[in-house]
Length: 402
Ligand SMILES: Nc1ncnc2c1ncn2[C@@H]1O[C@H](COP(=O)(O)OP(=O)(O)O)[C@@H](O)[C@H]1O
Ligand SMILES: O=C(OP(=O)(O)O)[C@H](O)COP(=O)(O)O
Image 1 (spheres, rainbow, N blue to C red):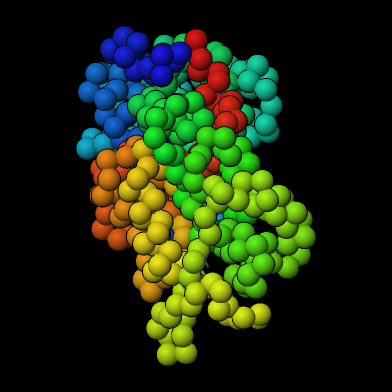
Image 2 (image 1 turned 60 degrees about the vertical axis):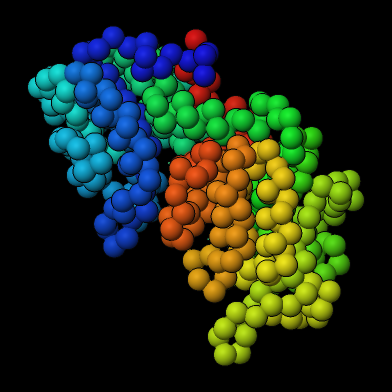
């Protein structure tokens, strides 16, 4: 990451403003611990150990949603991960925030209130405009430097993500560095051997965008999940029952059909579809059917079948690099986890370069007892990961470039 200043370029003991992404699931008002805390703790711990006065900015939820809550609980959770106290002040840039910042000693860590509670944070405007907000103009002068560690939010042109980067010497945090390198690898790196991409999940437009952008970079796409069913249907297999709250096979089908057919016609040799599928039998147990035997108006399919898993695993074992976007089945239900777990275990069992992304999919790694260390990189980004895969530049990363 040579075109960015990193923590290595900061002089110890300064006062630094650090943007993290602690955006988390919230259940009944309770913020849920997750991998974002653990990853960012590394950056925070390093700065505190180097005697910086560390002030943290982060957001939670969006105004109007149940997940839009204070960061008070985040401070406690982060403190557990960092292994030292994380103070909290319920203010973003007012007198209370400034007084709390002023009170800090070297090695102290303070989290300010949810940046999205500040009116100037959210409207998406260019970095120059954001740098001129009262939020940035008030806080920036009390710091020596700005660190952005929030790769997973770097696609948003919000004040705390782009404004401070223009107002202060800007540096990439450790999470920013590793996420950037891994997530841009497919767009930026040349691999000598086969490059394989596992594509699944439920987000049809993401899948179409990624496949369209990466046709030249990827040798084989292994499809599963709802996304795979869209391709099977376009290929003439009568599958496609929508899951609750989605209408991919109904209203949206027409909008996507032509694009998917076009991808199959142009790049059919690179695209591998499921050979068999799994469903819930009458007794509730998992059952499988060959794709060729699926009849019109058949049931909902919840996973790829075992022949597909074996085939996909064999391709992965011969690959030099494997990227994962989306799950191959409803892995949250153990009966339908074989596809997702099968390909992840195949990746973990090889020494290929690998990146697993997408919030839901990477959760399968811990759910089924796999070790993150068996993968090249497990991303904590969702939207930013997709954008990186399609070669889009992230505004929050761009403003860090020297
Ligand atoms: N056949 C299927 N039926 C129902 N849900 C599925 C199926 N295949 C995959 N899924 C669901 O897709 C989700 C992941 O999809 P998506 O949100 O697109 O991926 P990510 O968040 O990892 O980017 C998982 O929670 C999984 O349960
Ligand atoms: O969690 C995030 O995005 P993600 O769910 O796409 O990973 C980021 O914190 C960005 O949040 P936002 O999509 O509300 O701007």
